[in-house]
Amino acid sequence: MKKLVGVLLAASLLLTGCGSPNPDPGGTADEQAGAAPAPQTQDPPGDARSEKTSQEPSQEITPEPPANQAANPEPPSTPVQAQTNAEAPQGVDPNQGPAVDCKVEKCIALTIDDGPPPETAEVLDLFKEKGVKATFFLLGSLAKERPELVKRIYDEGHVIGNHSWDHADMNTLSTAKIKQELERTNEVIAKATGVVPSLARPPYGNKPKAYIKQVKKDGQAIIMWTIDPEDWKTRSKTQNIKRIVGAAKRNSIILTHDIWPSTRAAYSSIIDKLQAKGFTFVTIPELYGNKLKAGKVYGW
Image (tube, rainbow, N blue to C red; front, top):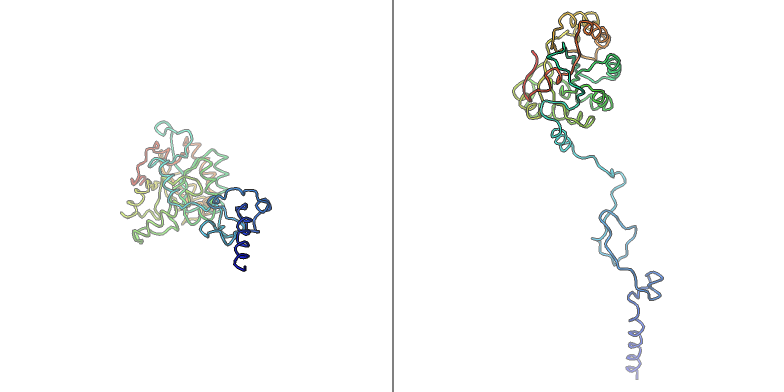
């Protein structure tokens, strides 16, 4: 008799379970009422579920990124350099307005090293007022501190060159260190402007073979100078004006440093006096007709 009751009880349980695809009372109200649930699909990549049941396999859950992790991390520097190098022909800075023909014009190039200090903003104001374009050879360490100033230099039509990371003497460095000095600076300038420099100038003018080889690999021409007023030594506004104006010739390359107040104070008079003599201020690429070659030394 007990066996018969057990058989009847088991049959009753089977009949009540067949109509519900999900007899788990933890389902939705529709599922408990007997309605067919929507088919389950895997979440799209990167979209983590707020809750999960113990029945769900762990591999279906994509964890949320940590709260302190950037949603859009910056791309590595190498692709930026590769992209900008591909866009800029070797030896030619794409940041050029209408080219000046220095076979016709009495051209002169003003170059500015070792910056940018904060006061470069004042220099840019002056150049804009007087319609002068110049070439800035920047230190990577200072460019990193003032990317907005680097961008302004570029945006206002001046040309930027690589002057190493921290003004180290290339003659004292290993090949690996030379590469690091140059590539770190290229990276910072490219990040600020979108363009890898097409020009380079070695600190103190020292350019060992390893330096020349590296800048050639980076697609950069080496730019020296023909007029050195030694503004870093004299620290004299009067001497700067006298030496530069007195030595100026057609196609001269003037070396200056806007980190010195005496040099910044001299720029206005230097520009006025040279323009009065018929000189047109141009960038280095313009001076050479945008035909500079990577690894070649210009000036001196």
